[in-house]
Image 1 (cartoon, rainbow, N blue to C red):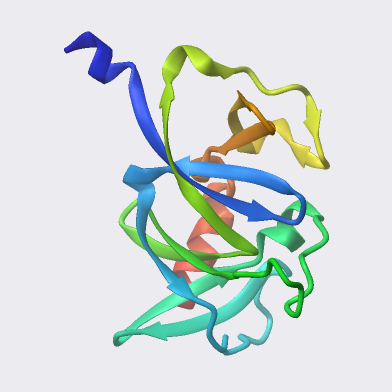
Image 2 (image 1 turned 90 degrees about the vertical axis):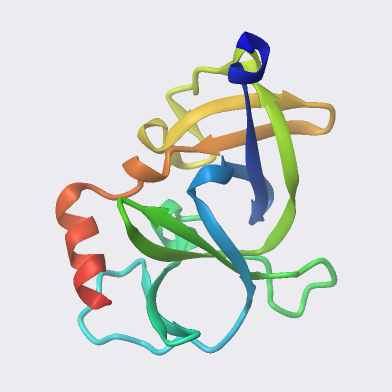
Amino acid sequence: MAAEESQFQLVTFQLGEELYGVNIMDVKEIVRLQNVRVIPNAPYYVEGIINLRGEIIPIIDLHKRFRIQALPRDAVDFEGGFIILNIDNSKIGIIIDKVARVVTVKAEDVKDPPQMLSGIGSEYIEGVIREETGYLIMLNIRKLFNAKELQKIIEIQ
């Protein structure tokens, strides 16, 4: 039983050149890229909203939030979409360049993040996992937005 508790699953995805992951328990679903309706006076990182089966979901552009260059939408390996996250009972979508896969991670394999990693402040990073081809950056979705920012995003809904 203890061995099961020391493992968890991450949904991994690409943003620019880096591989990121979020806990699968925080992921509601993954949807294909669709038109986003722009919201006037929204924070710079809020791309807009989508209507997903009658539910209004705010869409966040982590490229803007993290100052990462997005893959061109006409790139050969571009398979972008949205990951719909459940943050404190609110659904928020994040734009991704490419869904990778679901991976099982052992808790002891998660290392503390360095102070700065590819331009992202370490406050957003839960940990770093070494893989054969590089590193997987585990995001802490609850720290992506402070309480005031999260309230603004929820109000958009």
